[in-house]
Length: 435
Ligand code: NDP
View (cartoon, rainbow, N blue to C red):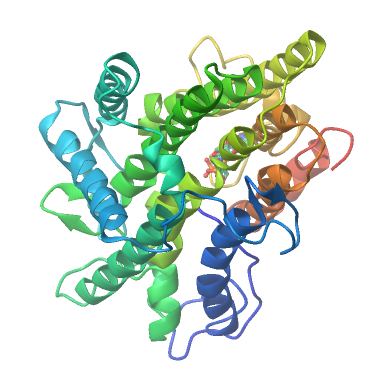
C-alpha cells in the first residue's frame, strides 16, 4: 500500500513489446538505478542527519548517529531479529483464522483467494509486545532505538534478497506476469516487479508484505521509541504520545479494512519486485517512524492549544480520508445502498458511473487531501526547530501529486471523453480551491 514512487517517464517502449507499454520511473536504466541507490541512501541520510547529536537537513554537525558505543552499521543480531520478525508474522498469518476473500478477475480469467488476518496479527503482536515490553518489562523494546541503524541495514539487505528471489522464481513455467514488469530488460523488470502475484501455495507474498511485516513493524518501532523515552525521562511526552497514537490509528485502519487492498493498483496491476518490497519492508517502518525517533532525541512539550489544534487537524484529516474512501467503496460495491444512492453521478460509455457530488464532488482525489492533512498532524508535534521531521509531509505531498497524475492518466484512458466531462464538473484535483 505504501511504496515510494518517482515520476512516470515518456521513455521509449520496451523492445519487442506488442502492447502500448511505457517505461515508468525515467526509463529502463537511469530511474531504476537511481531509485535503487537513492532510496536506501535517503533512509540512511535521515538517520545520519537527524539524531541525538542534532538535526540538520545537510550532512553537518549531526553527521554521525549517537548510539551507544559499539553500535555498528550491520550486525548479525539485527539481521536475525529482522528475519525472525518476518517469520513470526508469516507464522501468525498462517496459523490464525481469518476470512477468505476473492480478488479481482485476472488476465488469465481466474480470481485468487486471500486469507485476511491483518487485525489478528496486529492484535496478537500488540498483546505480546504490550505484556512483555510494558507490563513485565522482560522485553527491552528500546533495543529497537539503539539498533535502528543495523535494523535498517537488515531491512535493506532483506529487500534486495527477496527481490532477487522473486525475480528468479518469476521465470518458472505458468507464472502470471505483470503487464508493466515483463519488458525483457533485466534491471527494469527486477526493479518494477515481473510476477503479478507470487505465491507459495495459497500464501500471497505481495499482499502479505504490503500490510503485515512493514506496517505492524512500523508500529513496533514506534513502541520502541515510547519505551526509550520512558527509560530516559521517566514519562512519555504528549507530542510522542500523539505521534504514536496517530500512526497506530493509521495502521489499524489499513488492517481493519484489509479487504480494500485487493482492488488497489498495487495488487491488481503492479508486479512484485524491488519497488514494492523495499517500500513495504524498509521505507515504511524506517522513514515513517522518523517523527517518533526525533521526539526521543529532541523531547519537547506542547501547549494545550497546540494539542487541541493538532487533534482537530488529525480528526478532520481522518474524517475526509475515511469518509471519502468509504463512500467510493460503498458506491462501487452497491450504488443502490441507502448511504450512497442519492449521490449525483455521470454515466460513462463503459456503463460505469462516476460520482460528482458528496466527497467526490469536492475534488477528484479528496481522499489524498485527507491523508495529507493527517501527515501534517504527525509532523506538527515535532515543533518548528528543524525541517527534517517534516520529511514525511513533503515526500508524501509529492507522492500523492504523482499518484493523482498517474491515476488521472489511467482514468482518461479508461473513460475517454467522459473523464473530460467529469473533470469539467469536479475542477480541483486534490486540495479544494487550491489544486
Ligand atoms: P483511489 O482510492 O483514489 O482510487 C482511484 C480510483 O477510484 C480510480 O482509478 C477510479 O477507478 C475510482 N474513481 C475515481 N474517481 C471516482 C469517482 N468520482 N467516482 C467513482 N469512482 C472513482 O486510489 P489509491 O489506491 O491511489 O488510494 C487509496 C488510498 O490509499 C488513498 O486514501 C490514499 O491516500 C492512500 N495512499 C496512502 C499511501 C501511503 O504511503 N500512506 C500511498 C498511496 C495511497 P474505477 O472507476 O475503475 O473504480
